[in-house]
Every structure is written in C-alpha cells, then in structure tokens.
Image (tube, rainbow, N blue to C red):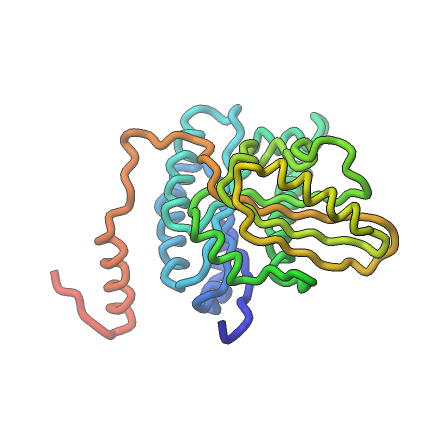
Length: 281
C-alpha cells in the first residue's frame, strides 16, 4: 500500500451531517458504520447509505446493535433483516446485544446515562481495532493484515481487550462479555495482540501465549502481535480479533438478498447525476 490507511467512523443517524467524512473516503481506507436496529422506517436508508459507502472501495465494518427484547418481537424481527442487510453489504459486522449491554448498568441508571455507557462500550471496541492497526511493536499488525483476515471469513467479528496484572481465572471468563458473541472460541481464525509493561518477564509472556492457544484450539492463528507499553509494573493488555463465528440469528426463509442489478443501476444513476451519461426509459 502506498499510503497509510485512514480510519473513520460514521453513525447512520448522522450520515447527512457527516457527508464530508464520506466524501473524503478513499480506496483502502477503513470505515466503521454504526447502526441501532429495530426501526422499520430506517431499513431503506440503511441500505442506501451502505451502498454509497461500499462504492468507495473501502474496508467497511458494520457496528450493529440489536434492540432490547422487551421492545417487542416485531422490532427484533426488523432488526434481524437489518442485520442481514448489513452483513450482505459490509466486509464484517461487529454486533452488540442490547440485553447484554443492560448487564453493564444497574436498575437505577437513567436512560440518558445508559445510552452514554452503551455508546462508550461500542467506542472502546472500535478503538481496540484502531489501536491494533496504529500501534507499532516488535511484531506488528498492520492494515493489510486486518483486511486479509476480515475478507477471509466475512461475517460476524469479535473484538475484545482485557488488561490485567495476572490471569488467575480461566481466560474464557475474562474475555467473555454479555454484549458480544459468546461463541468466540469457536472462530475459524484469530489475531492476538499483546501489550506488555516494563516488568513483564518472558515466563509470563510464554504462559499467556500457551493459555491463549489452548483457549482457541479450534482456530488458526493468523497473526500474533506484541508491543511495549512504557509504564512501570507487570501488566499485560491483550486484544483478540476473531472471525468465522456464527450469526446471532437464523436467516428467515423469506429473506431476499439485494439483486445485483440494483447495484449496477445505482452506479448508472450516479453517473447520470454527474452528467456523464443519460438514462432513457
């Protein structure tokens, strides 16, 4: 790649106000597209926005949040269609379960503070992948590694970071979250990025690697990265990136994928708007 990839994120609800961001996207950039599912009136807009981003030839990662189950069956069914549409158009999807997000707050948390907490959790997950690309280290993971990894197994993507001085409990419990996929250890491929502070010794590094390999015995290790954190003490910061996991929902029998001709028609429309061609009916 001739130039370093730029990393952006766009919220579906702010798409029109973030047109300048979308306009600056270039091939091989990385863009996170964030969407909260459940509103049926937003399905067409979701499709159009993703199609517009897809035409930029970027690495497009959807960040999808399922609605709460208490919001009703119909809303969840709508979110199922929207998730499948996102999966169809994006290179990968990071999904969050709102019912799991509820477990991160207590019952007295205000609605406003709850939304701020949920947004912050999504932001941290996005930041974990951003750091993995931008943080140079002894064994570095770059944008091309991430792109190859994601495109090898398109679909749900698990990203999570833990930071501990010691790892005394089973690693699966440390990496498990109620709001991210719970079958992450069954993934097909794995990227591990390990940060270590000044006093971490080789034995600790060896032991954590052995335990990670045991945890992911079913997955192929795609890349192992490591980097130095110039801080005192003995602390490890581990980020996992897992692909090839199952969708959280079954595809309905009546789900219809986007016809390929629609994408071609949209390109013709764009050319027509720019005056480069004319469409006659």
